[in-house]
Image 1 (spheres, one colour):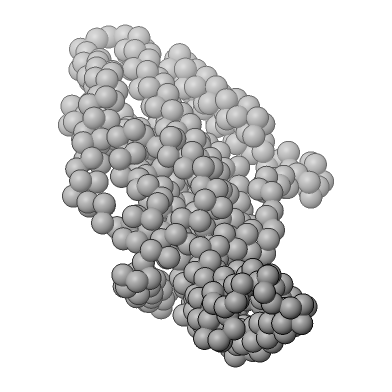
Image 2 (spheres, chains in turn purple, blue):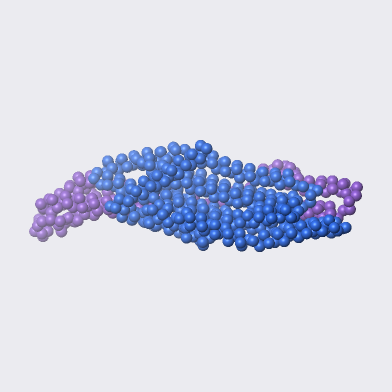
Length: 176
Length: 393
């Protein structure tokens, strides 16, 4: 763009000069000739940018303007999944709490279980990754034999795995 | 006509979806969880960069910028806006600028009146040469004042263009991310690069071609009348023609790019979303349907955020460009007033020079407004695409 500015300055200067010459020249027959010459000079000045292109042999790079600066690209999928999981946090908490309450009610309805606490861990796509169950049996834990304890654990695992349709390996039971 | 109708339909659609989502959010049992979800999402979104642009708005206009929080989002950011207030502030700003730039009027009028006096003297004095040179000096003074104010107006336009472009560069990735999180992953992936390219291309063409061209055309427009024996009216006309042609060319290309956008991507996204919802609610038992509904709430929250951020972006673009346009407009008004005042008393050429200055400044103003309009439409498109994907769900 500095070439353009230069040309503009030159054109303005020459037009100004011709105007001053025009004022200073005495009005006689020669003035017409002088005016013609000045007109030709102005024409040459205006033609200059076009001539510069012609004499440069129409090189393509004369016309290129460079490239605009682009902002750094972002990974949209990553960013959107981050936002989505942030938004899911409170909602997910509500969902898992609801499901845990349902299951707790189901467990308590069994005569062998006095109280139950559940924690459900859920992944982003809605599948359940882990269930932690804490069961308090009707009889004190010390009075139960090893066999009874195992049976209770199996019962709880079976119930939870059937209800939520998940593998028993993902269920962790704690008694007492 | 067809394009107009398309834009109107799009806007209607935007408002209807925004309204329906916000009425759904008004359910009192859901509102808390939605608010929590929206606030979590806002925290992750990292809005500081966007909010930083509020500082580059004129302090007087900053009060119209809404805060980006749950209150604004649940009311869709429209409740706090008072149109009369905004108009009042604009009119006040215009008057302030006109009064601030009235020194231009004084200078121009003094030079013009001086030249009028000189012309009267010319009739009674023997030696015309001296008077002619005096007239030329008056003329040069007017040209100098005109060039100064044109240069400051152009610098203002450059600044405002740069502000708008860097704001768009901050806003578009954020909006595209929100479109993707609403479910329009395909649309965001298709449109984000296209819109970024359009914005940068438009800004680049305006910055490196149109504004210099306007500069040259303004200078030539002033030189036209220096010597009546060597008129450059045609050259000045050519340059004006070139610059208006470039502006309309850019706008046409832009509209073409927007028109090409198909409804294919949003529909594909909608179908994908629907399939995912079906899978979760039927394959995952008990919790599945609850989970699917939960996803619905989160997506609804993202939709609200996206529409509000879009609205916020449009408002910021509007306010960013408002003051420069008002400032340039004030200068244009002063030139037009001076041209009207000077015409009966003074040289015809002086009125013409002042008028051509006003014309060049108007072109700068119009190109700035066109760029703002294009950015406005870009935001509308991106916001609308997300709504389409969410509705197809």
